[in-house]
Amino acid sequence: MFLDWGSFTNLEDHPIERIWVVWKKDMFGVEVIRHSSQLVHCRVNYNHDDSLYYVTFVYAHNDSERRIELWEDLKEIGESMMGKWMLLGDFSCCLNVQEKIGGLPLEPHNLQEFRDMVLHCQLEDMNYCGSFYTWNNNQEDGERILSKLDRVLVNYNWCRDWPDVQAEFGNCGVSDHSPMVIHWSNSERCKGQSFKFLNHLTMDPEFIQIVNHNWSKRREGCAMYRIMRNLEHIKDGLKDLNQRKFKSIDVKEIQAREKLDYIQNLLQSDPMNYHLLKMEKEEKEEHSKVSPLCELCGRAEESCRHLFFECDWSRKLLDLAANWVGVEAVHFKFQN
Image (cartoon, rainbow, N blue to C red; front, side, top):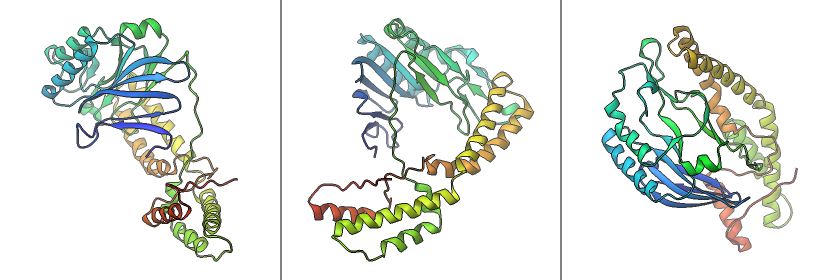
């Protein structure tokens, strides 16, 4: 699914794959050591400087009884941990009673098992910035509930060797959870340019017309040459379609997201403000109008260097082409 990326899911432990771990193979070496329905524990090697550390991705169950298994698993991992260790994700539980506002107050005894695990493993919150409350119930006025369910925990070895690494919790946007980003202030992370498949074009009525028109043209040359020429002409037609109809969708989505982000920043300091909650609801509705389409667009830079059609006939066509030239797969590249 991910070209040049490694991936792991805990499908073996849970039918809906609650945790996905994805990494760039040219940057990271990742070995999954342990996994369950609530965690994926990995050994990570950063290829650029051979630094080694451990990461546990957590997605705790809502049921407190089922979370006991998670706490016990983390204790076992912590007892044998000798290196730098980071745990991050949705723990479905607060660490302190002050980490929730709205709804029923937290009872200290309900937090004790989580606190015991943190103490047993000698963990602490990573330095962080951004939103304090990382979850909300998306309700308004007196029914609003906010709490800190998502966090990044690290052990002493991590704090000693990488004290400047920082977690950032963004605003929830249209979700109910805050996104988390880890900032490595002392490390350079190279971002390669990824190729985008313009999925959103398949939603436009002109898409199938462009494909049929260019695919049905008769061309001279060998079979593989004719295939490549057809794909090149289809690429040009779809590139033009994208320019004409979808060029400004990114701008609209960014504007809607910035408005929502601004309101949610205000709500961080006044989370029960009725007028702000009403404005947040309106901006979420506005954002939802443009966001799905923009997601399909993939914020694609108009390069169109790679083109792939996600449909049955194209898969069969490429399989036939691969068999014809005697290779396992065909990968077409187009020069701008």
